[in-house]
Length: 151
Image (cartoon, rainbow, N blue to C red; front, side, top):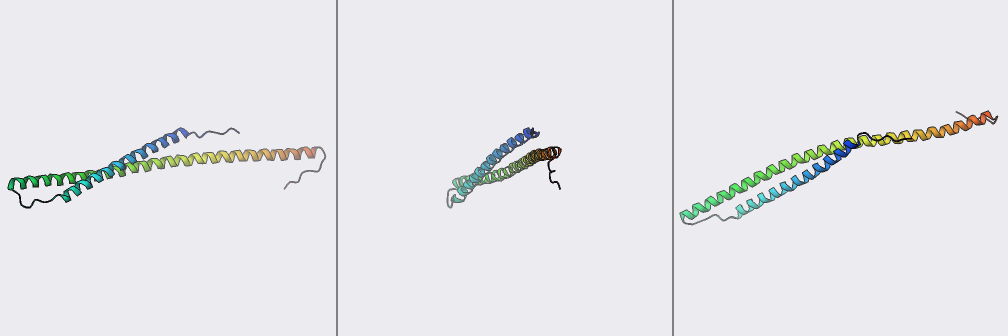
């Protein structure tokens, strides 16, 4: 019996490729988010460890306070970037999940196709075996032998 091919196989291969690309994008986004979080943590730690000036001349004190304010702004912006990167990574991960679901749906269709083909082949073999048995019974009755038992 000739086996029919799964007509959606090219679409399945495309979906698998899309899923692999989405997985790679998700991994890259997660790495970028982790790096941004690490940088923000480093900025925050550096700011926390910065000594506050106690008694300095007025010009030096103002310069130190401006420097600390700038460092605080940098730390805040780094944390905002880390949060945005984490949100972006989550969105990319959701796209990967959707791609995986589309792939899984087509894989289930392909599996059903294979099962249907196997069932058809099994039925064909069963019919061929039945034909052999029935053919022998027909030949035996035409030659005058005892008829085959049937139910």
